[in-house]
Length: 286
Image (cartoon, rainbow, N blue to C red; front, side, top):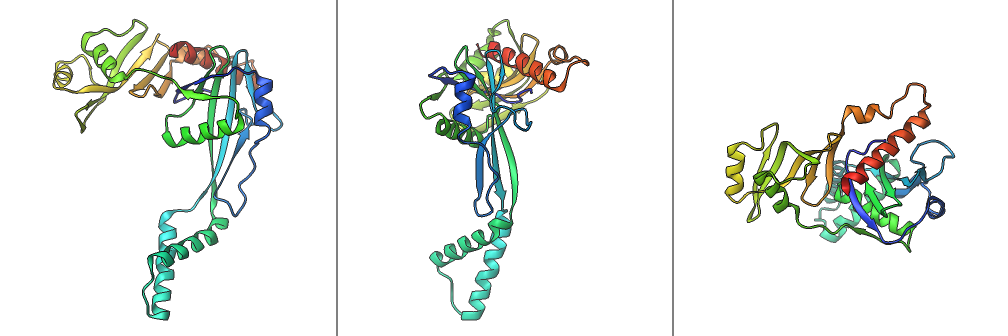
C-alpha cells in the first residue's frame, strides 16, 4: 500500500478506529442498481471479505471509498439521439424543438443505462490520529470532491478542511533561484514554469539541470515555478504543485525493501508497507 499521490487535509475533531468504523458501517458499498448511474460506499482497504472497514497500524488508519459508475459513452448517446431525431423527422416531416430533443435524449439515456457496464473506482485515505490529518491518495479535483462530500456525509459531526498554506510559487522560485531550499529537500530535474501575468505562457522542463543559466534567465523574465520535482531525505521523490498537492510519488528502493520479508504473510507485508509509508508521509508533510 504505497500512495502515488497525496493531498493533505486537517480534521478538526479527533476519533479512534472503533468510532470511525461505526460511522462507515452505516454506508457500506452496494453494487449499483441497473437503473442508477452511480453507487458509492465504504469497503475494506485490504479487499478481503469480512475485514474491518478501518485498517489500523498504531496511530494510522486506512479507509477506502469505492465508487461504481455506469459507463455510457457520449458518442453512443449522441448517435442514438441523431438516429431517433432523423426517424421522427422523416415520419412526421417536422423539425424537433430544443425542449423535445432534450426529452428524447433523456429517454434514450434511461433506456441504455441498465445495459451500461459498471466501472469501479477506489479512493484511499490515510488518517493520522496523532496530528488529526487526512491524506488522500489523489490530486484530482473530481475525485477529491467526491471523497470529501461522502466522508462528510458519513461523519456529519466531524469537520474536514483543506490545509491553509501560503502560495507556493514564490517560495519554490526562491528555492531554485537562490539555492535556499531546506537541507532535507533535493531539487531534481523537472519543473513547470508559468508567467503569473500571462497564464497561457507555460514551459515544461524534463530531465534538465534546473540550475542551468537558461532556466535562471526564464525566472528573471517573470516566470515562476508552479511545480517542481524534489526528493525528501533520500527517501521519497515527488512533484510538489502550487496547491500543495504531491504527485508522482516514488519511494526509494531501500525504503520499500525495508518492509519486505520473505517469511512474512501477505497481511504482515501489507501492514509493514502501510505503516512505513504512513510514517514517511506524515514526517515529510511536517
